[in-house]
Length: 234
Image 1: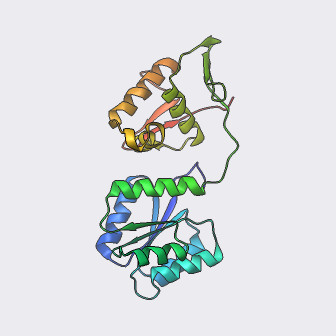
Image 2 (image 1 turned 135 degrees about the vertical axis):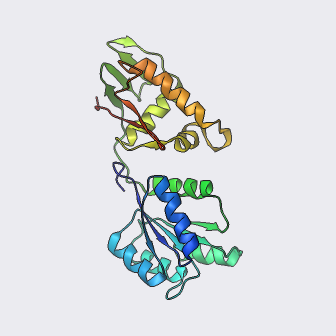
Image 3 (image 1 turned 45 degrees about the vertical axis):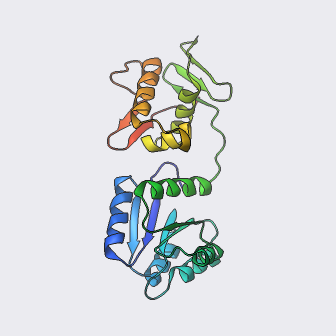
């Protein structure tokens, strides 16, 4: 999966209302989405299109989700599969995981939980990149290895969370980071502040690093999504 482009997700779901809701949710969160209406079409699209993640229902006409999952796994081990189903019995979950699914979500579920599980799976399967040690933003240089920042040779005091936010943005290499991702990755699931906290931290970083904080060059807003970073690696 490239960090430069938003991930491609294949939804395999035969129920129209659920399929439509999933497509709308994922597209609203900037994912590229395709959908299949049954197991046969889903398997064909998964193997032909090689999406970054498959959302796979179990109870479907043609081929059920267990069979689709086994066939995908027979061909590749690097395509994350998240099973979504109304079946919640332990045996069904075990069967799904044994078939090769990476995670399992029982209907009904919240959109927020689904998005968090998708992000977790995409991170787990993302190709390992060489560590990003330093970046340059105009006259500012940020060294993640030493946790130091200078601007025109003068030290700039950044907090631990500001370094973490910059590193997350830099690792996306121009792709946006949502406010929810900042909260999940930088602050942690059990310490959720409000999304306004993210905006305040970005404002602080702009004041420290931007030539004109009111008209940022590097820490850019992606409206309705979050923020992205324009940078030159040092």
